[in-house]
Every structure is written in structure tokens, then in C-alpha cells.
Image (tube, rainbow, N blue to C red; front, side):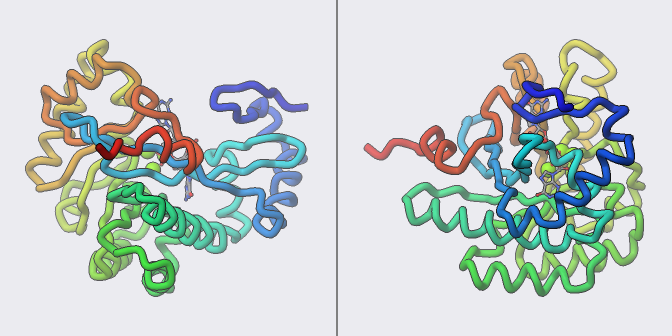
Length: 279
Ligand code: C2E
Ligand code: MG
Ligand code: MG
Ligand code: MG
């Protein structure tokens, strides 16, 4: 019933099937036990300093290995996990597992400066989020400065005042904050100025046609200028070509992430590929 062999090895459903109530019910049902059955795992994708090409961080990306349907994309299962009230447990697992991983890398002599973890709407709205993250950092021994949390504009704008409070409390912990998919949401510049952010991640949709579409060139230039004037670091998502890198370097974008540098991968493979040789 599924189409296999899609990009990334994910299994894709026909849109008719995803919308189909039966398919959705099945995923819902299967998701309930998925955490206990240890069907989730994390891939990690490098975040690279564009001028030195050095590893600056990794982003943890959640995968679901369904026993029968194969690997299912987070774009598909995260919204369902949110709807059925399991995101708190999954989010806590992602944080704990990725924090443990960065310590395992430390112990193997592979130093990853920064770990980026995606938050979901529901998590940001949860009162206990801040203390839970504090606990996980203490338990795993990860220095707060090494953890970056990714939020989107729409997540913050759903409830700006409480969003600002939560983000401020997270910064108090010492973690850093990035706006993911920047440019695709509706954040007012007035709020953007008030948010305690560290980094703008330029959405892949603008990076995709860079140097081929003058509108996208202009949008990326404008986002980089905005980031600079707000004192924020910048990172471009979805870099696939060296022409995109050349453009971004010319425009002083600091970091990049994308298939050109590395696909998201298993932690052992990432360490093998990115460990700098010790002479
Ligand atoms: P995102 O946070 O914006 O992550 C970037 C997505 O772009 C990832 O898709 C990554 O595999 C993909 N990507 C990276 N480089 C390239 C490239 O050069 N070209 C193309 N075409 N794609 C690239 P992925 O892993 O399927 O994740 C999709 C989204 O699911 C993420 O978007 C994030 O919003 C969400 N997500 C993933 N893991 C988690 C998680 O643990 N918690 C939450 N709440 N959301 C997650
Ligand atoms: Mg992200
Ligand atoms: Mg993104
Ligand atoms: Mg996204």
C-alpha cells in the first residue's frame, strides 16, 4: 500500500492516503506504542561555518522506523504526535537522547560544539518545559551553552506574550535560541526585536533557487541584513550547490546546513566523517 524508495528512504503515502481517515487512524494507533517499542531514532545533520568549512554544530532530526511501513518522515508523524498528546514524551526523549549522544561523542574525543533540537508548538506552550530542560541538562552533564533550541515564527506568534516569557526563561538557563524556517511565517518585526534570539535559520525554500531567481536572491540578502542589524547569527538551510555557498559567503552569511555538506546521518557515521584528524 505504500510507495517505497522515495527520497531519503522515507516512505511516502499518496496524498489520498494521508488524508484518508483509515491511514491516519492506523498511524495514530501505531504511534501510541512506538516510543516504548523504541521505534524512534535520531539522525544528526552538520551545521558548517561557511568560510572555514568547520563543524559548528549538529541538528538532531527525529525518525520513525515503522515495523511494516518503513521509515516515516517527521513532517508526517510530528503533527499527529502533537494531536494525540504524545509530543511531550517524544520531545523529552529527543532532548535526553541527543544530550546523551553529545556526551558519548565527547567521550570518544569527537567534540561537537553545539547541539540543535527542534521544539514543537505544544512543547513551547508547556509550563514545565523550562524546568524539564534544566533537569535534562543537569542529568546528562551537557553545558547549557551547547544546547540550541529551534522554534518557528508561527509557534511564537500563536501566543506572543507567553512565548516571549518562555524564551526568556530558556535563555536564563543559558541555552541559545534559533528561529527555524525563517521567512515562511508571519512574525512581526516588532516582536522579532523583543525576542531573546541568537540565530536566524533562513528557510530552504529561499535558498533553493539562489543565484537562479533574483527574487530569492533579494529575499536572502534582506534576511541577512535584518539578522545583522538585530545582532543575530545567520544560517542558511538546504544548501545543495557550491553556487549557493559562493552567494552566501559574498553576502556574509555565517553558517550553512544542507546535502552539499552532509545528509542527516547516524551518530557513528557522523563522527567518522567529521572527526578532524589529530596529527
Ligand atoms: P527542519 O527543522 O527545518 O529540518 C530541516 C529539514 O530539511 C530536515 O528534514 C532535513 O533532512 C532537510 N534537509 C536538510 N538539508 C537539506 C537539503 O540540502 N535539501 C533538502 N531538500 N532537504 C534538506 P526532516 O529530517 O525530514 O525534518 C522535517 C521537519 O520535521 C524538520 O524541519 C522539523 O520541523 C521537524 N522535526 C524533525 N525532527 C523533529 C523533532 O525531534 N522534534 C520536532 N518537534 N520536530 C522535528
Ligand atoms: Mg530545525
Ligand atoms: Mg528548517
Ligand atoms: Mg521545518
